[in-house]
Length: 353
Image (cartoon, rainbow, N blue to C red; front, side, top):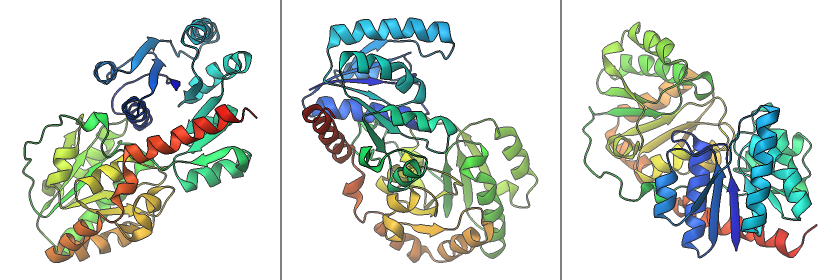
């Protein structure tokens, strides 16, 4: 099968990009011809190493540049003659839709961030892939026909990005709590900082590590510096691959307010962390609805602090949840996700309606 993926860019540190990169490389491993059209970025070398072809198509949102990009993409479609086109971002879907219509090529879209208003544009696809059950239901509520939606839960274990990763041990103060994510309100870091300060009153030992970057970094650093537990909070900045820190951490916490299907959950489970996540969007599904990780209400630092105290006071309980993190973990592999996506491609190629 000849597959063309379209993304705005292939820059690192963007979950949508990571998911698309993992999928493209896995499809090559399954014997398919895969090409990625984008503005380029950090993963081009990885694509070439995994025999994924790349072509440059600018994704600037100005009308004139989009028109030029449309002509460029049209030329590539005529040359590549893909069996299916898969768009992963809104600009990509808008750019590809009319060209796929003209060429009679099935367009598949993946909804990665359904909380964005423009996510409704992903409904342009003949099939719309939702990255969790929660996202699928949300898109139905927003008017996308249920018959066109297919759910493929995000999975990243075994991805090309994890090949040849640095296995050097990282040393963290124990008991350690780790956060990995963007530094912006949707991820809920202030809730975790507040919860950790409450927990430190009961368990005055250990440390919390914050990994990530974003527009609110200065504000969150100032917030942490003003806390009574400031000496126990360390900001690590952004890391290309957080796995080493996850493997060294005792507890991984993702206190999101909205999160369709965060890849860091499967990465933390792969690293055998005891995981705490909020009961929002795709997080419960990624944690086997509480079997593989602890679920807490979103925007509730008090409830989060209670779970932290319960773990921090009892090392045996941390070990228990580390073991539970492995329950059904095979569900979170990229190989499983790639096979499910290929089945969706075949369904539209066989039945063009």
